[in-house]
Amino acid sequence: MNSMRIGEATSESAILDTWEDHFSQLVNSECPVRRENERLLFEDVLKREMTLSPLPWWCVDISYKEVERVLQKLKLNKSAGPDAIQVEHLRHGGFLVSLYMSFAFTAMARHSFVPKQFRTSHVVPVVKDKHGDKSNPDN
Image 1 (cartoon, rainbow, N blue to C red):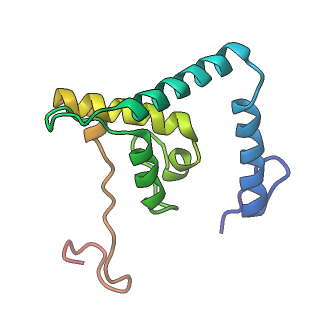
Image 2: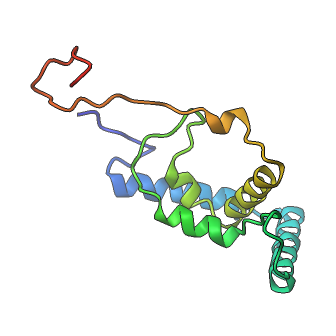
Image 3: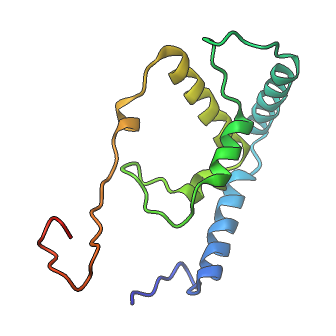
């Protein structure tokens, strides 16, 4: 079995803690302009959601809360797609990831357009019988 090492961390929990600390420092670094922009964006989204009147059926609006709810339902420890983004990245990415995803999905739904990158995936064949003939397509 290959052992993974990130810095001095070798156990799974220590590696997770190392990455959490690293990304926490990146996200929480002091950048007043970015922090102010995030605050204004968050306030704008909350204001929009609180004053939103029901939209006509053809005017789709996917909220960040819906995205967060769906992300929480996704199974962990699955392989990444062609973009190398795993479920864990999205799930632990925080409010801004959910917000920007909601903007993207709303735009795609309203314009009836899905970018090529969203239509690309990895298909991995799985052997049904590990003791059987692996060259047989029916296996």
